[in-house]
Length: 100
Image (cartoon, rainbow, N blue to C red; front, side):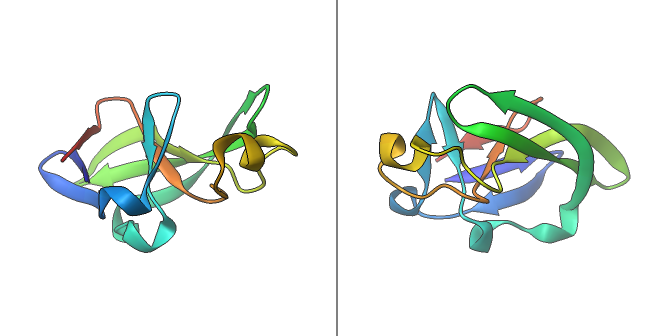
């Protein structure tokens, strides 16, 4: 699987290592091309996964604010629900394409 934006591969890894939650693919940190990511002060809360933190994604000087998110500390019970620890796994939106 690949996460692509602005013709750059932001993340790439085998499907069996990713986690699919509510229609979104979550990439383990080891498959992220960190050169494109900057911590964002933005946060949201999911009732069952907990507080999400965000990354701004920048490629060739173009900024995609809040383009990626992750859960640094998943809410109690959420890992059991997903059946795998998804702490710090990164998911994408806001125009970033995830494809095989």
